Length: 281
Image 1 (spheres, rainbow, N blue to C red):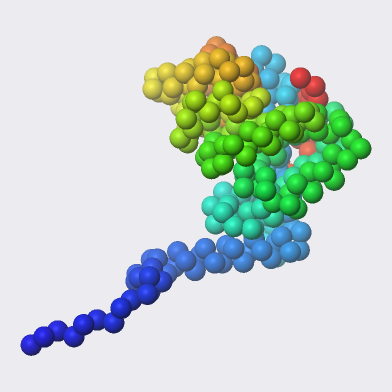
Image 2 (cartoon, rainbow, N blue to C red):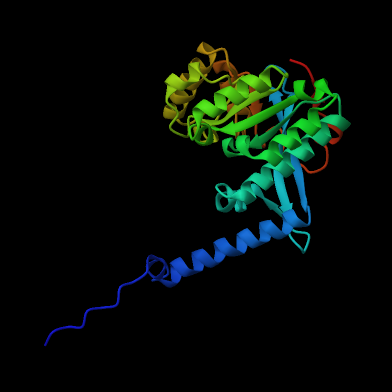
């Protein structure tokens, strides 16, 4: 007996064919709503983590401002819990605007420090992000000279031509740029000679357990050598032990960042941590 021809399924129906996929989509939508509500109410803050000088670990070269949002109960939510869901849509651009606005306000209030703020290359063409930057720099050239913008390796590769032009324009105003998560993505090294990054931050996947892992030692040394060839300042991320710090210093890394030197803190670490600050250089 001939079997009936099944009705044609819409792709969305296939996406929810299993309870697991339906639950994942429900979680994604819930995260988007949480972020949207927090942004509408301007419930956000920055947690600052020191990036210390390798040869003088009691001196902070700068502080990275890491975005946090606060839900309606007052719970502080780190970026790792929501950035994947918002990175490619307008909520991601609004997150970048809020982080930049708060970072610029900190620089205006604290003339002794330098601050790095994360951004997506997608925000370069977002009018409100550019307006936020212009407002923060207006009449205060010293702020631009103390601002570092961090762009992830994967983000920079989305639109390398736009990124290089933008970076060149902003560097004329004193702003520095850091290539975040260096080594973790798929950067064609040929682009490094065209990019104008001042700093490269070596991804933590190469730093964690480096003292026990010969492969990580070789790879990290190679990344340091590449950065040095292009006259880029190096920062090792995710440094968690003194032994790791010692090895990285011996490799010639310029700065170190990680829980060994301080966790991200919403209260100004330049006032409470005992780590000194250095606004120039």
